[in-house]
Length: 76
Image (tube, rainbow, N blue to C red; front, side):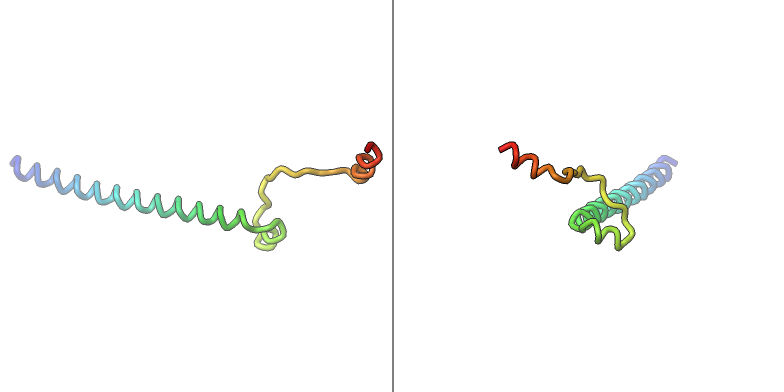
């Protein structure tokens, strides 16, 4: 009875290890794909992102009021 029990336990562990290895491989593939997608989207311009229907990223922008350069040049 112990031989049958240990054989069943060994098969269960091997199946579990195989399923775990498959799950790890799938997780690595998914992470790699997500990173590739982020890199591709980072290279696109705001207009290109608009064309594919992807929301523009929240990047910091610098807005300068009209006439600022004139004011700066006059202070010189």
